[in-house]
Length: 238
Ligand SMILES: CC(C)(COP(=O)(O)OP(=O)(O)OC[C@H]1O[C@@H](n2cnc3c(N)ncnc32)[C@H](O)[C@@H]1OP(=O)(O)O)[C@@H](O)C(=O)NCCC(=O)NCCS
Image (cartoon, rainbow, N blue to C red):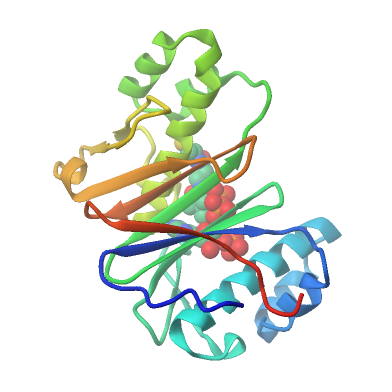
């Protein structure tokens, strides 16, 4: 894999990783896993789920190896109380998301980061889902949207909320209706407003992106004005 280059302060690298098993990727990525991960992979009932796990975990290890200079199969993970992985030996910040055969991973130094991608359903009861999960201000803004924009706005909100709680390292335990994000899907600088962190709108920034047609993506970063580079993961020799 071409080296991603140094990750300076204020820089954020956002990687797109295809999880299609082409050109022997599966074998190569499986070689980066440790015993515990191989055992976890074996426990998946369906080949498809097993392969997606091996490909995304293997790609994560190969990228972490490129950033830290450590061997992929010697990297040791620690897990936060809600399961967010971090490295035992390096303060590198990273996060990963996968959906429907696609994966994205984000890396930074000294900046907490979270990423989420979702394959968009063609048709669903988006307003009903919003009633269940979103904050009141988000529900109202979504209900005011023209019919043809509701789906995109729904996924913009969903991925922004997920990216933020993933940057914090929390899962649904954070609660999803006690903070809100910008609902406008095309917003240049979406923001987060949180009861728990009144300064969040100034101390966090976000972007939305389309990792592939039919997918929505968002990334949340601590601080403002970071230099974001998007990269495509193409491992060597495959
Ligand atoms: C992990 C979590 C935060 C996101 O799950 P998800 O969207 O299904 O999965 P993603 O593919 O985006 O992310 C999974 C990856 O995030 C990382 N991760 C796991 N726990 C995490 C946490 N607490 N915080 C941040 N990252 C985490 C791991 O690398 C994981 O990869 P793995 O499954 O291969 O080990 C999940 O615990 C959660 O709480 N989801 C909320 C679901 C929901 O109701 N959302 C409504 C949004 S409005």
